[in-house]
Amino acid sequence: MAAATAPVITLTPAELDDRRLAVENTIGTMRIEGLDPDEATLQILNRYASGEIEFSETKRLLREYSCTLL
Image (tube, rainbow, N blue to C red; front, side, top):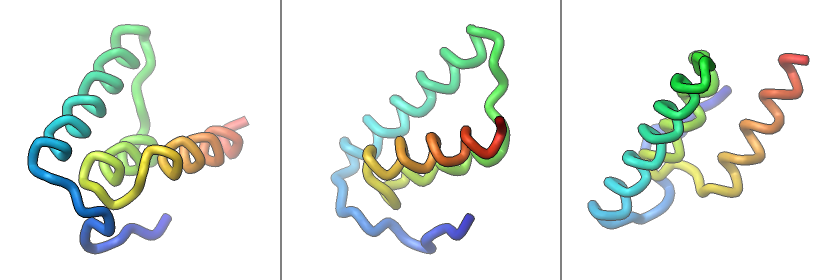
């Protein structure tokens, strides 16, 4: 999976904080439910948190990745 070297979406510091918090909450919820996100999942979520991709792209990538696990 290729990763951009810099954010491609211009976000304010507050928006980046919101994204980071959303990702941290998502990972925490997964762990509470007994799921341990793997490295590929964490990479996708971190790309969203850093502003490299939008939420719609995040969902698409996670959906595509989860299909490879079946």
